[in-house]
Length: 293
Image 1 (spheres, helix red, strand yellow):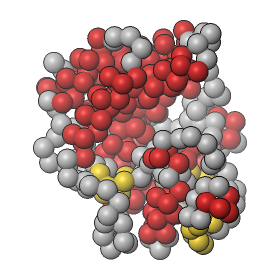
Image 2: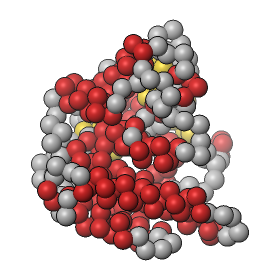
Image 3: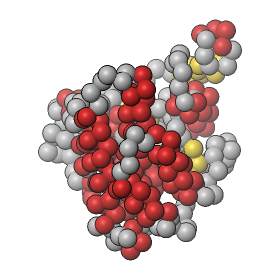
Image 4: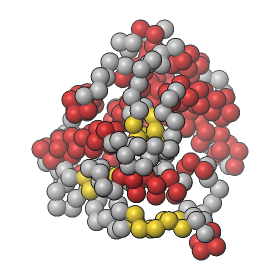
C-alpha cells in the first residue's frame, strides 16, 4: 500500500519470501508469481500471487451458517494449521535468515517496554508491574519456528464448499523466526476477554455468537496434542499478548492525539486501561510463580 507506514507493517518482500518458501508445504498459502521492487511501476514494491477463492471469517455474520460440528472442526483446523506452520523446517524451505530466534522472547518483552515508554500518554501502574513480572518470567528453554505474528480467523481464508477447511493463510508481513507459543498466546487471548475488549466497538468476532465454537481451553489442548509442545509456561505468552495489545492500542491513541487533538479518546483510553488490568489479572492467577509477583 502507498503511504507512510512502519516498514514491518506492510513488508511486501517479507510476505513474498515467506509464501514462496511455504508453497510446497502442508501450510496453505497462495502461490506466488513474481516480486517487483521497481517503485517506478506502482510507486511501491509489490508482488503477484495466484487468486484463491474462499471466505474470510472476519466477523460473526460470516460463520452464522456453520452448525456445531462445522464450527468445532473449523476451530480445530485453525489450530492444526498453526501447529503445522510451527513444525515446518525453516532451513529446508529457505527461510533460515527470516529472523533471529535466539533471545526472541526477551527481545519481545524489551521491545514492547521500550514502545510503551515512547507512546504512553499517562502512567499505568498495571503496565509497569506486568513488565517487571514478564522480565523475570521468560522461559529459559524455548523452541524456534516460523512465527506468523498475527494469526487469527481474520487472516485466513476458508473453502466455500467445506466451511471447516482452510484454503489459505494470509498477511505474512509480521512473520519471523521466533518462539511459536507467541502465536498461540495471541490466538488464546483474542479468543477470550482481550478479544472482546478489542472488538467491542466493531462487529463481534467470528466465534462470539455461534455456540458451536469451543472454549479457549479447547484450543490450547488441541495445540498441545497436535504439536506435542508443553504448554506449562503458556501463561507467560498469554500475559505478553495482552501486554502487547495494550501497548499497540496506546500507540494508536498517541497518533490520534497528535493528529486529531479534538477527538474524544475516552473509549480508547478505557480499553487500554482495561487491557492492562486484564494482563495483571492473568499474571496474578498464573500457575507460573514468578508471574504472580
